[in-house]
Length: 170
Figure: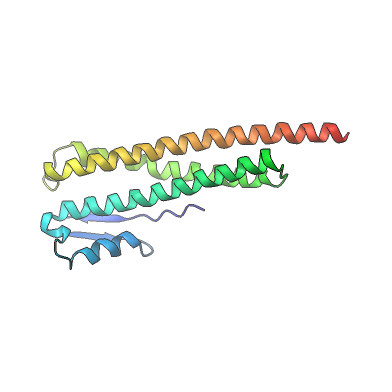
């Protein structure tokens, strides 16, 4: 399953406040960097926001990689050793990818705003980093579209093979 937790961030001129419904590893990692030799806050609160957003997007990338692996398994269960129970797995994964796409799509606009629009709290040198995040989230969204199409194709093939097997048994 894809578990996406919202990370709410409030950015000020020299501070950032985060809130989320459950602990997020990236918040702990970035907070842990504050005690290091080069704390992100020395580069500005906007840079800390970048680090958080980049970490969240990395989590999405890992989730997309898991979906890709599950797609490989589904293809094997359709073509390698036909498994009649795979249809529910396809529907579940299709639902999860559509849900993730609905969650990620609005973030593209937010990241684009941070990356391109002048803002008093986001310095131009930090916007360059947000452009990298924008590129990553775009690739993830594109991958989710591809996964959805592949899952639809897998479902179509599954239904065709199931119908063929039923006809052979008749």
